[in-house]
Length: 293
Ligand code: NDP
Image (tube, rainbow, N blue to C red; front, side, top):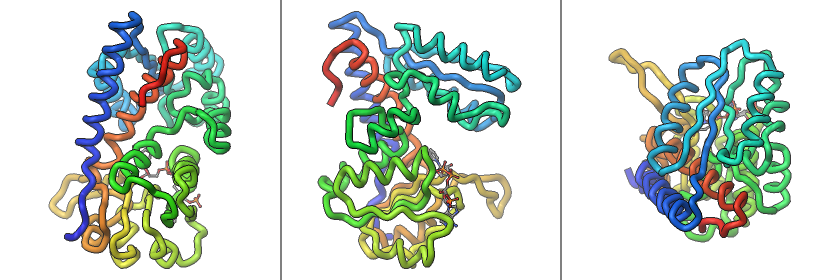
């Protein structure tokens, strides 16, 4: 292996430490406790795990955690009423509705009913528009975490060729916007892209957000490139049981790349750390206080 392994777990712990310091200062100087509300509809097992770990880390950094667990057949009107109540609750600075929602609920409608100032996931159309036009916004947590790791590793990203594989609203598109904002030359690839290996082979930075286990292999990667692996895929182990793998084949990519994020322990931990950082930012903005760096 030649690549530097970017330790997202350690980086995320550092970010959470900075958030905890910011929270402590807010409490001491202004008597304000940032609050994050998470709304979970239904009992999707993966969502339950995420919500539990978000709640635990929210409390660990000194914030107030509010959890709203709603029945799987909750009506749209009832869910919107919960969001309305949270929008108007001054103790709540961030609201996150755990996706995916059950099929009878319109995700776009629900997300767009969140007060944009409290939309710590950055999925509200106002925040998407602000990000796209380079204005101050709430930035989606997973791409923000990827950008922070890239900036930390490279310093300036200006002029680098970046290929983002995946064009979802929650990862691929905002990731591309952020890289463009940092003056990368950005290509967005997707399922209809022709000769994906050749496209990826041009990249100084590859962000894989596809949802296909170990799809990106070392022979696609330009020597020395940085690979950010967003994918979280559970696969069967030959000896029985399961393990998590990314969208990149770690072994073969690490043999060629200059740097790579592992799965687990790369992008995943940074996502929750950025959620907490966004909640602190939202709280500072709501109170007219300077935002954390
Ligand atoms: P989506 O399913 O919404 O999007 C996947 C994207 O990959 C689509 O744009 C799709 O193209 C593209 N794609 C699918 N197959 C191919 C292919 N063969 N070649 C090229 N592109 C392809 O997924 P998400 O963006 O929500 O998530 C992506 C991955 O990231 C998943 O593994 C998910 O679990 C993980 N994830 C991890 C997070 C973290 O915290 N680490 C947070 C969020 C997601 P098209 O649009 O043409 O269909």
